[in-house]
Image 1 (cartoon, rainbow, N blue to C red):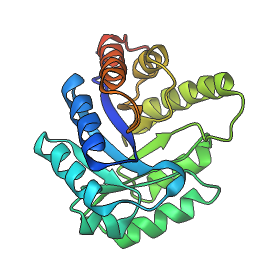
Image 2: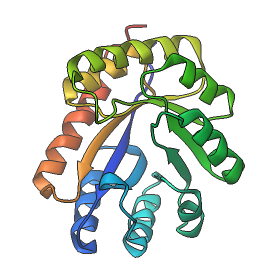
Image 3: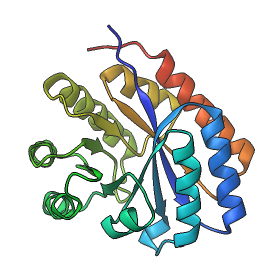
Image 4: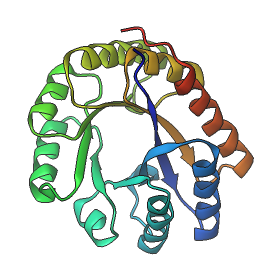
Length: 214
C-alpha cells in the first residue's frame, strides 16, 4: 500500500515582517504542509519577533514549527529543533537532544552517511533527514544517493525520514515513491507570492501522485 508523504516546508526568512508573513501565508494555502523549518541564510541571527509571529501563523493551521536552536524554540513557542548537517552532526544532535528533553521534537540532517543516520536514530531522534549540503558540486549524483538513502532507511527503520534540499518536483515525486515520510520544499522570503504558490503546488501534487516503489 502506498504511504502518505507530507511536505516539510524549509523557509529561509529575510527582510521585513510583512513580506515574510505574506510568503508564508501563501505557502500554507497552496498545499497541505505538515512541518515548517524557519531558518536564516548562512545561519544569521533570527529576528525574534518575526519568527514568533510566523510560528503563531503556522501553528494556527496545525503545522509543527522547528527552529535551529533549543533556547529560541522554547522562548518563541516552537514545537521542536532541527539539527543541521555538519561534520560532527551526531555529537551536535546528542547535545541538542539532551538539552531539549522530551518537551520538543528533535531531528537531524545526517547528510549522506548511513552510519551517522543510524547513530542519530539510536540517540532518540524524532526523525532523520537526508539533505544535500551546499558545498556538494555534483548535485545530480548527490540526488541519486539521496534517493538510495531514503529507500534504504524507509525499508529498514520505523523512525520517519525527511528528504531535504529537493531540487524539483520530479525528484520530490521519486523520493515520495522511495518511501520518504516528508519531502522538503525550500522557499525564501524574497520570492514573489506567485513563485511560492507555483512551487508549493508542484511539490504537493508530486508527493500526492507518487507510486510507492518499495
